[in-house]
Amino acid sequence: MSAEETPAIEVSGLACAYQDRRVLEGVSFSVRRAEIFFIIGGTGVGKTTLLRNMVGLATPVAGEVRFNGVSFTSADTAGRRAMLKTFGLSFQGGALWTSLTLSQNIGLPLEEYTRLPADEISRIAAFRLSQVGLAGFEEYYPSEISGGMRKRAGLARALALDPEIVFFDEPSAGLDPVTARNLDRLIVQIRDTFGTTIVIVSHDVDSIVGIADRLIMLDVDTRGIVAEGTPAELAAGAADTKVVEFLTRRTIRSR
Amino acid sequence: MPASPEALGASAQTGTENAVLQVALGGSWTLSGRTPRWAAVVGDAKPAAVSLRADGLSHWDTSLVAFVGEARRWCSDMKVACDTTALPEKLGILSGQFEASMRIETRSDHSHSVLTYVGLATGDAMAQARGFLQFIGECWIAATRLVAGRAGFRWFDCVGEMQKCGAMALPIVSLISFLVGVTLAYSGAIVLRRFGGDIWVADLIGVAMTREMGAMMAGIVLAGRTGAAYAAEIGSMKANEEIDALSVLGISPVRFLVLPRVMALGLMMPLLAMYANCLGILGGMAIAYVTLQIPPAAYWVEMLTIVDISDVAVGVIKAVVFGLIVGFSGCLRGLQAESNAAGVGNAATSAVVTSILFIIVADAVFAVVFNAIGM
Image 1 (cartoon, each protein chain N blue to C red):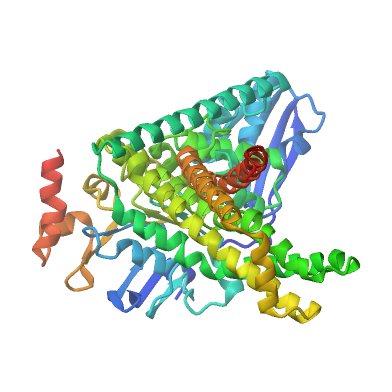
Image 2: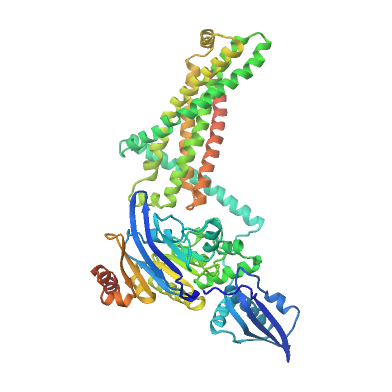
């Protein structure tokens, strides 16, 4: 198998739990390189849990996660650190460090992992902020900007190191429709330019229909995947009516 | 992004043709690798035009975007033409965006002149004083409404807080006041032995504990233990918009959160102070027995010749006031907290500092007042 054919992410038989309560069981899927992949499902099905287990913020009960064919779940600390460098994670609420300015927030990963001089770092930070529509806000502290702006700044920070894989936790929740669509465009632009693999946890149907290459849907009853495919395929005829409902009814209502 | 051979380092080869600076970009450009800087590449050259092209460029990321962006910025500053048409189209677009981002003025400036700082600090101090008075006023209004029976009191919360600040503080108060008794006994013994008045160590500890140390130690323990907890709790409620949620329901945060806490401390503090008195006297008694061979019964009888009910009353009155100070400081700092993680931490710290400061000040005032009225 050549390097090009190895999926960027492979999840096999993953089981996640909180204390004794199993949230997900036997979750297996793979994400191709440079793909925009959505993890969807209603609230409380464990989308964020799945994401946290994939990036090592939580430890799965069973199963394996591989990035570019290398196991992440069984990697040692040094191996994990090397892999984490190639990830970007954009948190639901931005998760910006409140004691740092936006410029410093974005500069921190660059300071830690590159040998770039300080002026170059601040220029790259300014560029990242302008990419997410926050040009000129470098010297602001997170408490001085709105929730939506914090979210976009969090995205800029996730992109700081030009990661190979970017994970988004609810990127458009709490944003107005215009900003949300701009964000979608930005995500597509990043993928097209740098061939970045993108995994998005979302229930924004407009965004799913608009930019998803493929998606999986999680369900609370089966504690696993109920559907997998492209949005068009699934909306046209999925085995499970829940999937069709999710993708079509809400779309109709929101238009 | 496909893995690329890192062996091919980033390169920018320059050559001049007809006063046009030709820059050939090659190799693999990554943020974590070593990449050329535009300022170093161009040096002191003063070309009539600059032309950038890709030559054996394998893999690139934002580091190359930054390089080309800076080149374009330099060209437009020096008023020379910059030709980037020979570069990949995406790189052209992104570097244009990068150049534009360098031109946007930063909106906010946090570095101020000394004068501005003085002005801001004065304004801040005035706002603090105003906030303090407003808080006292709100507490007064809430308390009078309560006394007049026009508003309910959260007894359930109050009892819970009493347990937390009173009963659960017993171990630490026990330890600290016992040790205070021990240290007082040792230092008293040094002086009193020289006069052959070993037995007066009982008088010394009796008076010192009941009038001063019992209330003071209980106050300082609760300032660190309970005052800080109140500030952190109310501060994080504020950060989480819980205080606003109370306000829009027309529920006064002062009545709902502050009064039960302050009341709990005002009720528990005298009890804790009396408990601290007992433990301190016990500590002194133990040391007197061990080092000065004073039997506990003799110690007790000697102590009762000087300590009377007015000394205990002085301690209790102080304890009530210290309790109120700790409660009010904790709640005030919590309500004033900034709505972020650092704000909550600052609120807890400043609650402890405020409480201890006011406890010491109040103690000094009490000393003068009690002396004047002969208590």
